[in-house]
Length: 214
Image 1 (tube, rainbow, N blue to C red):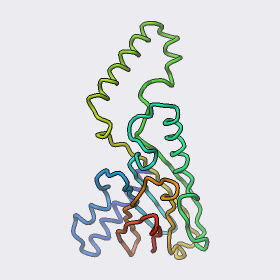
Image 2: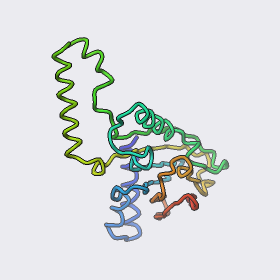
Image 3: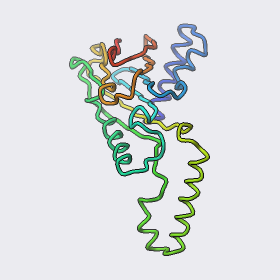
Image 4: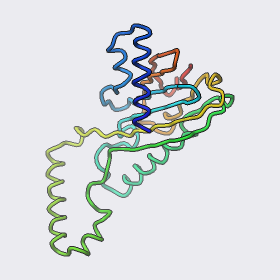
């Protein structure tokens, strides 16, 4: 789904750029996210026929308050909860009832991962005994040394979520209320690229100005 959405956004951007004789660099802006910046998230919104596509990308700090690998059970739970929340489109986007929208697919992923091996530790320790325990300690020591070399503030992790809606009456899709600000207070601005068959525009959303108008 992620690949399909990005291909769609790329095609629409190129078509619109050619049709309106826009500079190439403008079209490129629709295909690539801007620099990683805390407090700022990005959305691509595309309408094609009876389908509405939304892609949301945010630094992990906006979503869970950190960008390093989760180190405690609370941080692991926060990451998992964030993923589940990002799948719950009804809490995140408000679409006009007249449009007859239905969520056909959603996906949320993050590159924050726990690389400590804890999930399989018991099984492997039991199987390999002391030799594996020594290897595990060596790995952890190596990771700690890596963490010391690579400061936490230099790490960049993100959450990505994508949604595909089916619209019974796409002509009734006049706006989208973006409610991400209420759920994730770390988000201060959302840079939006809106693409349809007849329109392209860029806008910035805030907690006080959170509506995308078509």
